Amino acid sequence: MTAKRFKNPRAEHGYQGRPCSILSVGSYVPERVLTNAELEKTVETSDEWITSRTGIKERRVAAENEFTSDMAAIAAQRAMQAAGIKPEQIDLIIVATITPDMLFPSTACLVQQKIGARRAAAFDIEAACSGFIYALEIGKQFITSRTYDTVLIIGAEKLSTIVDWKDRNTCVLFGDGAGAVILQSRPGSHGLLTACMGADGEKSDLLYMPGGGSMCPATANSVAAGLHFLRMDGKETFKNAVTAMCNAAGEALRRCELTIAQIKCVIPHQANKRIIEAVGERLGVREDQVFVNLDRYGNTSAASVAIALDEAVRTGVIQRGDLVLLVVFGAGLTWAAAVIEW
Ligand code: UT7
Image (cartoon, rainbow, N blue to C red; front, top):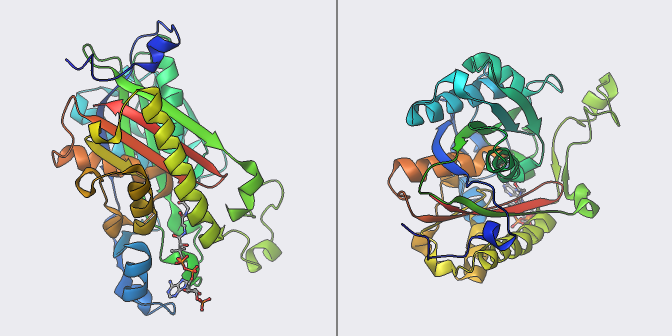
């Protein structure tokens, strides 16, 4: 079908594993819409500032009794329904999140129970906003090695619980939601061609949450000091995001001997429209190649590209056989890019 369009990096390494495809995708965002106009009433900000500096107009906020695992389970059920996959078929569940329901057990285990995937092994991974591509690449290894036949990958976040709603520097940026994909080996498809992942722990202090871990467990003092809210150096994060996303995307394309013009749809992490524009400009991406939905959801971290991928597929922007480039960046620092034959 498309065998001659690109170089398959798996073949280059003499690796005989079978291909891994995304069989289907699903997503869920909470009902509650929080607009810029509402934020104007709670912090010193304006719709004009948020729109011009970020591109965000509104975001979704989960209900108090709606948790990351609930959103993840609905996204998973939608992906399963789209592919006609039954819960018992799922061999493995990986959830990428920085806002698990609890530190343990993993959110993946809670999702396993909620969707009735009794046979599935389950674990979480944490690579912040890069988590979904990290999880995809991990899941792919189980398919190509024939360890498992059906893997469920989810990116899900309830960031509204770790955002300081009094801090205008961060509270306008984030939202809640979940996206999920089913991985299988699909005959006739090359699927996930390559993924480039990277990290730089030297810059871990650009975006982090100090409280709640073993370094700073919850105490009355830690709560009073606001240590359980995320902290970000926006400007430095911005600069690093542009460089890392460009490098990762460039490397992923090079591995497949593809040019950016051959990519049907670029789905970047939905953090800031200006980051997306800067990355697009450097990579030579046409405006009609980029999928953007951050105006409606803000930055949903690990759920971001998964929700966007679902919208792109559902609205017909991506068709079977199209080449898709996903590129992400997040705390850690972490980054990743993946090329997929849809
Ligand atoms: O998910 C991956 C990680 N996150 C990111 O990728 C985010 C990366 N960073 C960014 O998107 C941008 O840096 C921000 C949107 C966070 C900030 O935009 P900026 O153009 O870098 O603004 P700035 O930080 O330089 O702030 C400019 C001014 C400051 O005022 P002064 O010091 O110049 O008087 C801020 O206090 O804008 C002020 N400001 C605001 N004003 C109104 C910051 N937040 C707001 C706000 N409303 N919400």
